[in-house]
Length: 312
Image (cartoon, rainbow, N blue to C red; front, top):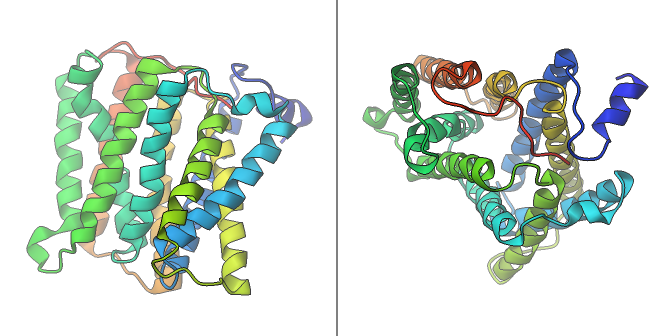
């Protein structure tokens, strides 16, 4: 990354430049790193409770975000513009931080990520009621296609349906609602402030689970926790930075690369081979999300800002 590009990535909120290659690179790398974080969390919750895992990662992640905020210009970046609105978004993020790892104890990594990535479909389906936006027949068709893909991934007729599949679905709904509320409430809000608040809340809430199976982590587990916190913080930085250089709908299409990374990690570390139905379902979910993103970009279905404005 050139020095001028790095300076812009670390610049105060609101500064952007049209450098799509940089934006695409940040998004793809961010998705890879975030999926690696999910894989580490899956490994940790095999032995450690979800509460202890997320609490310790939250503590380390909070320290990292504070240091990052100081490096980016001062602790003032951790101050939200609207405490009420930021609190709602933080609560949704914290819920996701607990719900998603709980699902990883019972279902394959790739399957959990596929279902969690239904969030664009949730946004499209709820936009007419929560955003008063017109949704054309093409996007409604994409919603139906995405739901068919989700049904193939879940495979309720397969006889092995685990109740935990509901958790990433809840995460998808909450991510979709969070995106909608962000568009309605706080364009220009500091993403770093939200991540810091989420990490701190995750640490605090996790402490309530101390009586339920906490134990001193081994050196290897501490290494995984620190690495997971580092990856999570770095991924959030890359994902938000990508929106400074490229249009949001284009980048939204690239988020589905996480499904491929999840499939690779699941196969390498846990021998989780996806079935043909899983791959077809993943393809339908990805195509659905891409169509929804591109229709939003054209402005033919509704008027939507072309560039994401949530910044560090």
